[in-house]
Length: 153
Image (cartoon, rainbow, N blue to C red):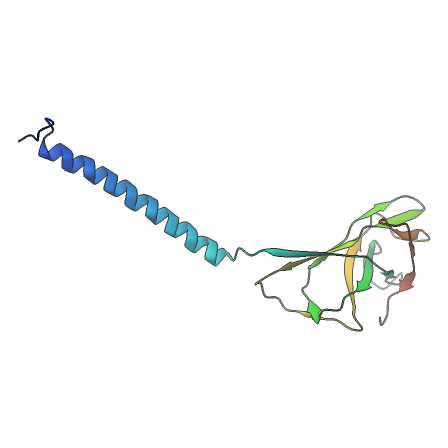
């Protein structure tokens, strides 16, 4: 049996079946992608740039890595997440230039918050070599930063 265009009934059914399967497959992929994005927790990030105000150095022989220093800065929020802050440095034999601290706050994410004492937080910075007698400057404006021994902030 053929229709007015010369196509058989079976050919029309097969053609419609192919398009139907393709449409269902596309809708299924879109739904799956939406679910994966939801459960992956895609969130936007708030980025804040903060000027550091001091460098904290652990005393030699304390059992800590002598190349690690802590960059101190003012932080007025109730707390922060471990790993939330990042800082960079360029080093010479005489000077360590510290970048501004970058805070990445993942909106909608949860973390074991660290408390803020005295509106001060710290970011960890690993130098290529121990600080020693080198001075520390803020890279953004050349201001010399005080170097303090570790202890209560």
